[in-house]
Length: 441
Ligand SMILES: [Mg+2]
Image (cartoon, rainbow, N blue to C red; front, side):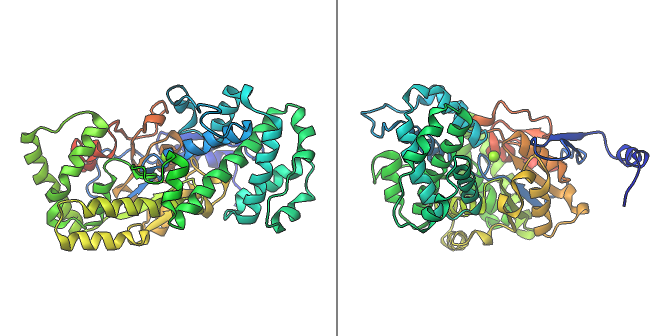
């Protein structure tokens, strides 16, 4: 139906006050889109569902991403070992290489470590990355981008050769003249391909159970302790709570939540308050046992990445539950559910369910998740959404969820969370302990 401007104005006037203005990339028409935002709901009566982001909210892949970014610089400089180059400056560089787009991260590092980059090393590293991505990669979008870069550098003929070859073909000769032009945009494009190759190789190792090899790559020691992918604080408590799986045993998992609270807020819960909280957590838990909330994971990562990452999260979750004070029967149930994340998630929505041009802050991924979880617009007032980024909070509200909680991650602290209904700097533990999940009491 075609309508005139008056009709549009009428419709818009009927909407509540707030709209999000979303700017599209230069190649999209129209340049700007407006989304009416769901009216803010500060305290829902009950919770039918919780929708949440993956990276920075449910888990962090920080360790792997930082390693892959540093390794990108190593490969583009040929300084592969620690005695060749100390590595990135964690203190100074971290704020610029986490929580933004991959392009931004790569641009930052290639600018900062410009003097280390050598054309021959870049050419060699890109040859390897292009070959691995086309030959062994699992992500069609990555393949398409590598092909695009090969075309851009006049190597369209090499695509089939690389895809068919069992060993990497050195494209250095063909690439060198392009690199000598000093085109920074080209260098960044190649850097992105090199970065993703490392990251996806690591994910492939993790997915085939080669954790020791990944530890060796990332920590320099196959037996190093520490998780490669960890749930964010509070997640190990929140997820089974919402599913109703803690029943009358929430108090047995509470010490874990108190510890996470201390980690993310820097504050201790004093003993007197603990007793009151435990009573309340048990009540909350019984409520969810009677009526479990649906759970949705909504991420701008592609399925290939999210699938592997969430499987790892489930492994850590199972280990933590096994070591907890829950009864054996309850442990068994939860650990079994960890074997397949579909037992947890009623909707598991990734960038692969949509397209690059429709990711957050557009509402699409959240709308798909709400639909997959079987929720209709009248239910949205009983949904809570969690995000650690600006674009994510806009997407939640634009999808019709009025109770949007920003849980800023160390690296997204500086984001503008104007779209969020609540901002919980202490993350999920603060949301549960200090605000009782923002439920109307
Ligand atoms: Mg995030």
